[in-house]
Image 1: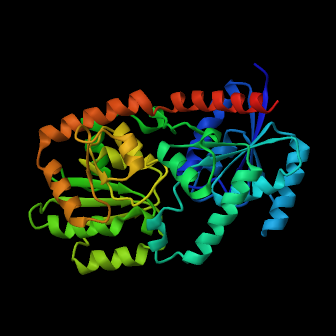
Image 2: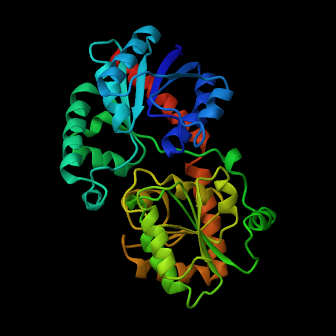
Image 3: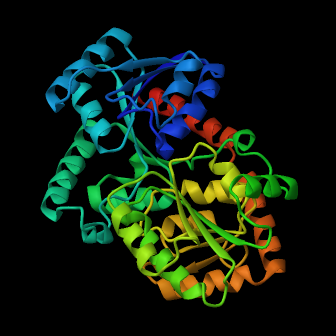
Length: 387
């Protein structure tokens, strides 16, 4: 097989699932005779995988310019210098800059579809101006159809959303689910659970539920807090840990926690580098997200052998087996969340069987090696098709 060079274009190597997946994929690409070059617009040394990627010696370029035109020019110069076979981008800003920079150059442009940003519920986000999002959608749709050769979708839900909201022909989209590194996550076990609880100052008798996600409308965490307000009357040992960086919803979440009087039972942990150990301390993982591309946090929770309670959205339904490792509820329903959480948390036998099923699903479908192997196949297929 011939050698390839891929230029990855990202906003920066920060804490997102897209960037974590890229960082974990890089060593496998090198083994497959693929040379990766990473182009970034911003630096995230404090929160992210930037330091890790640089320490491993990968080629990372920090592009100059703060506006669209200057960033397109900087990336175009890099494309001409490096002459990659593929430009692989993800998320709107990187997609747009990558598409424009490659116009007229002999390079294949491939975008990853990692979210469902134009779902109707997105327009209910109080931090989003609907008219601006419609403009973004129009630009995204036009440049997708005319300036992009192929698309990688992280789920069938992400593919369907792109077909419906951007008008991309389905034959130009290939679904490859993202995986997670089982070595980084580690194995679940009683001793690890005990040590993790000690470090988090949790008691053995605490019933611990965990949520992982930044504080944004999309993640639906306010509904989980409302469910906690109901549950605490019948489950006095219940503890909620929320791991994730601050965001637009942080102030609202703190006010809600204070209003329902659960300061000692709901803990916002902020950005954490030890999420696998936090998951290892839990009894249950709860994910009330309103829309997603692929729920990476759910996949990591399943790797740690946790049962799942989540909103019944298509990306989650693709990942879990409802009734076997997960209970799914209507999005935005705090009452249904509360019922599902109590149903599982009081049934230790069911927690065990659900958790075992979660781990089995992870091992069968979501390991990093399986995902990267399929991505490498996709890269070669896309290049071969365009030659």
